[in-house]
Length: 314
Image 1 (cartoon, rainbow, N blue to C red):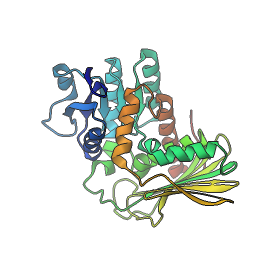
Image 2: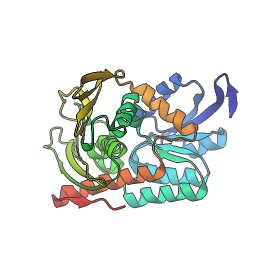
Image 3: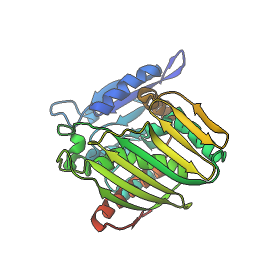
Image 4: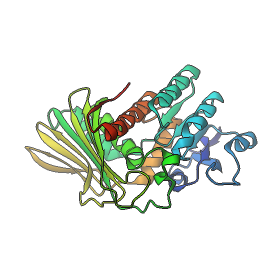
């Protein structure tokens, strides 16, 4: 590391130059001590490999934004090299492999974490604080909706070979992590894909009901093909009120009335804050939590087939 006015400069290597990778590059501008010194994209033929980049330029941490099918092998390699690694969700396409990464991180002492940009949203953090201060009474239900039309026909996120699933694997990972953050470990799920609109090789809409270890219920609705008219994406219901965290504003409603808090959603700030927290040794999600999210999504796809509730295998 070298020094900046704000402290040590963090040199990152970026693996993957798609939509989210470029968003991180832009977000780093909000946190000047974070610098991406190289970018390698294994999905682009002819671009340099990350192995070559590692030989040419030393880094303090790596950020993986490559297609999910590549996450496991790249993460395993970086952990073996002792390189702190932050990986976009999901960290692997199976719970077993995700757990392996968590075990290797712990055994080698190499920092490893999954991206969870909604945990970095200040309004989500405030909602968490208010829930756990019992401002809305006992927690009953957590509802997460990520639904907007996006043409996925030309994106690798809709390629089952590259991703291993569709919108449940993609946006569903963020939604599941949000519920786990607010309500704790998820023990069982029941899911079903929505009606195909874009006729992709993967599901473009999905619903997932969840049961948590504490008895709280939750619901996830994710879609690339339906634009939701809801102003909020996170709705938390308690015995004495509700909290709604939205794209443009957030609210808490109790017997005392409705109070507005926070600011509109800022994606770049949330992405940049993840880099900051990871580099400081306080990642928003630890490796075990990342593996748990993969296990929930895996159970969701089993439920697609069984059409029943499925136990989340820990």
